[in-house]
Length: 274
Image (cartoon, rainbow, N blue to C red; front, side, top):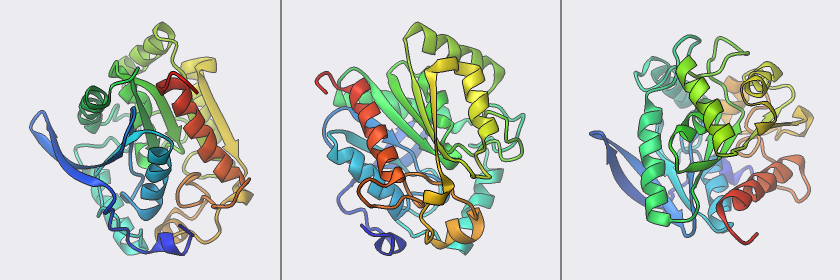
């Protein structure tokens, strides 16, 4: 899919849409593939064609992808107007803790249950999770579910008002650090060097929490796609989405290398023979 094609709606017809309920809350989840489970969470403002493209790459690498619908219109190209409206609703939703001091977002409990179910359905040593932007830090907090063993934290943007903050309660931060040590976990992260929504201060906070168990990688913002969908061009306004909206689908490109490194990380943690 080229950048221009990614700016049209994606019908998601190669995914199986399932309604999955946990603790009385039902959400749509788009599922495809075979092999160990990987939860690919959408970035703001939803499951865009670029998010779906990334999920297909993960699927084609030998995984079963579960893409939960957390906000926005599934498959829609991110326009500036619609994307801004979705983001405003998410900022006041009880499911998300968008600002500093809010602690861990409640929606993570639902996502942990999804990971547990997905691992039960797919088997293997555990489940992988990929968070992006609004959901970036969810990949870390989901590791309090024992089945999650391969977290990828892409350009995490929360809390919006504290570039050095982590969207975590103090108790969860301690529990996550302990789990990473106990089970020898690693977290992989990506950001652009000039991203205003995910700065170096945030990655420094991850390193302070996890030490060398956080592998934060930085891509030059000069490599970012210069013609992303309207929401990213007009609202985000900075290189941000390394493997989705700002990816350049050319062999050897830094963003393609980041995609390949993420897939290699998932393979190394979730499969036996790599």
